[in-house]
Amino acid sequence: MTKRLAMNETESYKGFELGPIRPPSEAESLLIRVTRNCPWNRCTFCPVYKDATFSRRPVEHVLRDIDTVKRCVDIIVAAKRNGDSPNRTLAQSTISDLHAEHAAYQFVAGGMKSIFLQDGNSLIIKPEDLIRILRHLTFCFPTVTRITSYGRSQTIAKISDDHLLEMADAGLNRIHIGLESGADRVLALVKKGSDKATQIQAGTKVKKAGIELSEYVMPGLGGKRYSREHALETADALNQINPDFIRLRSLALPPTAPLTQQYRSGDFEPVGEVGMAEELLLFIDALDGITSTIASDHVLNLFNEVDGVLPADKGKMMRPIEEFLRLPPYEQMLFCIGRRTHRVARLKDLRNPSVRNNVERLCEQIGATPDNMDEKIERIVQRFI
Image (tube, rainbow, N blue to C red; front, top):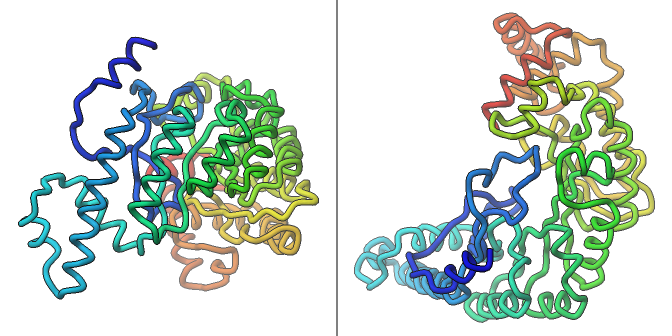
């Protein structure tokens, strides 16, 4: 490990870098790669980075990325202001980094309001280095209102409160943490590398520093065996943290994820669509005494309507799940398959005759029944993973 990290400090600069992922809420953010891949890389539900080695990028390379994209942004903005072609102006400049140019175009199109630090755990670098990067970003892009990063609970728990305060002062104002579950048995099952106590410690440290906190929760992660425990323990952890955002990411089983292999060998039993709804209802009902915003902002989530601010919107978010669970199995099947194929967005869409007929025809074509719908949906969901 020491040799590899030392080599990274002397590696040659190869141009502006982009990592493979970012949160959906960072779709319009400028992506600045600080680290490569994930330092833990053992979570059984995650297929990302599994064949990749983690490394820290040299700080000077990150600063050079920022300087290059800043030059591109300035050229694009000036060209638009003068009525010139940004493409032609960039082509006439001394910049020859297409990745930086593309990032700059995206950033300008999004309004230049937010920046996301990649990859899976950028907070693992030395606090002094991260603060230096943050200050350079705010110097180069003074109009930015949000700088965010993923962070592992294990990493954040080891950062001093003073360093977190310095990061906040330097511009870091939102951290995304993959809580996934608050149940220790589930966390151990999926090799998360953290426990409930550490998750709570990390979350409360972020909040204490005045940094916005997004906690990601994965309904279904405990399978049938730990579904109830997963829902209740996760809610309990969040009740102690009170994050700004609770973002739902329903469990999927990508072909290359280790958990998928456990499922195929019979060592993991998914909860299914109805079981997922029951678990989600139990989870939301158990959230108490917090003011978090719940966001169902992912294509894999079954209920778009589960979106609101606690405590005021709690009943509103629970009602569509309760309505779904009261439906006969055939109606549940229509909604689930309609939702998974984007033919319906909400339960009420099934009351539209043309939409309903469309979903019924699809179910007939694929041979879906209430008894086999989970199997059919698993195949459909693979397209979105």
